[in-house]
Structure formats: C-alpha cells, structure tokens
Image (tube, rainbow, N blue to C red):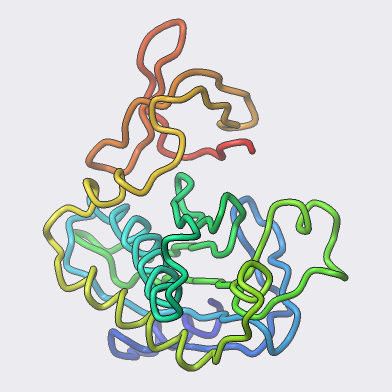
Length: 232
C-alpha cells in the first residue's frame, strides 16, 4: 500500500493497481503481519478516487469484501465446485471459505473537504498458499483456494476475476451495498464476542447499518460498533 499511496500522491489515475509477488511488510487489521510466502497469493493495492460523501466511504470496505467473495464463487463455479463449499464474509473485512479466512481487505483513506482525495484498497487473497511453515494460529484459521480444493490456480486468471468483480460493485455506487453485504455476513442473529478499543463486548449480532457498523444487542441495549474485531 505504501507504493500505491506514493503513486496516488503523485497524481496517478483511479484504477491504478500495484501488485506484489511477495510482501515483506504486509499488514492486516491492528497492524498484524499477513502471512506472505512468495509466488503463491495475490497481494494488490487498488487506487480509487471516489466522489462518495465522507460518511459513505465505509462502503468501499463492504464492496471490497463482496468483490472477493464473488471472485471466489466464480472460480468455484468454473470447476463445478460451488455447491460443495461456502463463501461468506466476517465483519468487517474478512472473506471466509468453509469458515476459514481466505482473504482480507484493508482500506486506507486520504480525506479531502467534501470527499476523499483517494482511497487505497489493499487485498490479500490466498490462491496457492500452503501453510506447512505458517505460525500455528495461521494454520488453524486460514486457507487458500489450493488448500481447500486441492487445485492449483493461475494467479493472473484470479486477478482478472477479482478486478472484474470489484469493477461491477464499484460501478453500482452510489447505490448502497449494505443489503448485499448483509446477505453474506456470518453470525447475524447469533451470539458474538468482539474486542472494541481493548475491551470485550458480548451480545447478539443483530444487523449491519447503512454506515457498515455492526449493531449488537447487549444486556444494556443496542450498541453500534464501527471498529472492532469479531473473535473466532
């Protein structure tokens, strides 16, 4: 994302894509490192210059997740495997294949007065990644297309499918993506635990509102969570 940010600040046009064969400083939520063995996954940053109101920039995170989910389903469908697997979203920005994380979406925004100067969408999608050498916590919660399906995938084909899916969702703006996101979301109307600002929050996940916030039913009433992490 650092390279894409520099290009954005230098005036690069919307739609600029930066690819990496490996990451030496990949990061996810809360500054975590992203397991990034070389030559196996897609690591990309996409530069956008949306005209959305600042209050609606959270939609970019939602359409990032939707695009990756659509891409994965397309790849499964091409091999007649879609009915045997489940693709879902974990709030706010993880994509799951059979309940294991296959991709993450990270958004970086430079704000202007009425809208964003630019938005960078960072996506890490595990394509042919294997996890024999991964840390224990990664092995227990992550997967890839190859690990789940036993099939090696052409990364260029996966990239094209992903960019096509993203372009489709992005072109629909300013129509809200929340309904489509809600349909793919795990844990709605189920017990959930989150960490929010270092504290643990327990309740029932009731909804995602129009700003992309998770609405939790707690013992003291409804609480709207804009930033946090759902615990596995």
